[in-house]
Amino acid sequence: DGGITQSPKYLFRKEGQNVTLSCEQNLNHDAMYWYRQDPGQGLRLIYYSQIVNDFQKGDIAEGYSVSREKKESFPLTVTSAQKNPTAFYLCASSISTGMNTEAFFGQGTRLTVV
Amino acid sequence: AQSVTQLDSQVPVFEEAPVELRCNYSSSVSVYLFWYVQYPNQGLQLLLKYLSGSTLVESINGFEAEFNKSQTSFHLRKPSVHISDTAEYFCAVSDRGNTPLVFGKGTRLSVIA
Image (cartoon, rainbow over the protein chains, first blue to last red):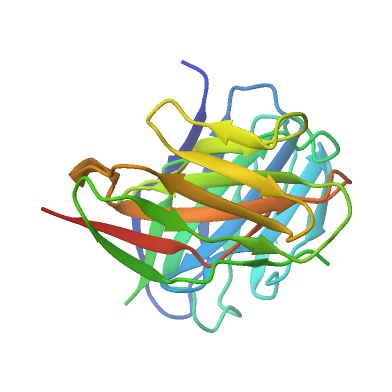
């Protein structure tokens, strides 16, 4: 089945530690995105990538980093510089940002800092 | 930059009653418009979209939305809701350019038996 796979579904992190969230897609999409969801705030864009080896900051990129070494994969690292990392993280993909007819979403990763 | 306003954060409604979830966007340029639905602890699923053509678009489960360019609105409606429609609904906009979707803050629809 084609789709987007995020792992793990739940993640716990100690303060001061970096953690990497995985996102893989087999839809052959060029564009991939990371959004953060907090109650009552909707989805806010962290980073996006339009093509392999290229990515751009979104609205709330501070404290996060990404890489795009393969078309299928767009991992997100939450660094210790992110002051309030507890949230629900959603990965998405689309054919491209220039033809943004639909974005497909993964099932999300819930990150909790303990 | 685009912005999306969902005017109601929560909408309670009795089963089999009609519902309207409101969405307004900021830009008057040509846009693509979307409604997504999210069930608890899950990702977002596309409900319906407006790309071009008829301003009234429908989903397979009875929802519809109408694109109104003059009012920059894309309100979501259903004539008779079911318990299973209880979820959070997000309106989103793309300016057809080289930018990602911009989402509203969501409306939580609660259907009461």
